[in-house]
Length: 271
Image (cartoon, rainbow, N blue to C red; front, top):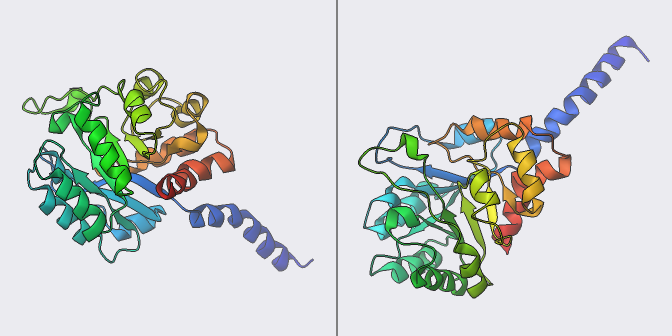
């Protein structure tokens, strides 16, 4: 073989894994956009997502945390994601408001959303409340998947005017037993919550946004069903690169990596 041809083929072989990695699907199931109540945050746009190799980002709105006009929040979310190849609009629901059933119906029928995001600690209810099961039943009827946000940030970084404890996840298992058809994912649970409060709730999916520590993703796969762990960054509140590095510093097989990056989320969405 001529030296030139040898170098070309060697270079192509060396680049093949990188090209395959860049071409692989990557779904970020935990993003927000819009103004945050306590800090200025960058906007995640299509250019950023393309550069990072994110093929699909599930985007909710920071406005949902405090706004009472949830219909307006969801309309703006839908418009923000309309026509995008990479942004999937995620609806928000505040069950404490009298119009929550109308908001849910609009998400499914008017906006064509497939996922609803709940913020129990911001909206003043617990997972033990009968209202929570009522919401889950309504979501099943509307064929909507549900994301429950365990916390938006660590208590140590919260504004003194917005001190909110993390959601108590212990009642979740019982709620899911009452509504067995629900497709539910817990966002922003840390490793302690996953191994204690979520024990016995193995039908729920989780994301990796707040799983910390050396080989955090690798370790969590020992304590949680591998098929129910999804990539989530909690960007732009967290640096997106943090979740990307979590995947790189854990020792995962190709099948495990592909599952966490996209396959699990896709399966959860399809039901």
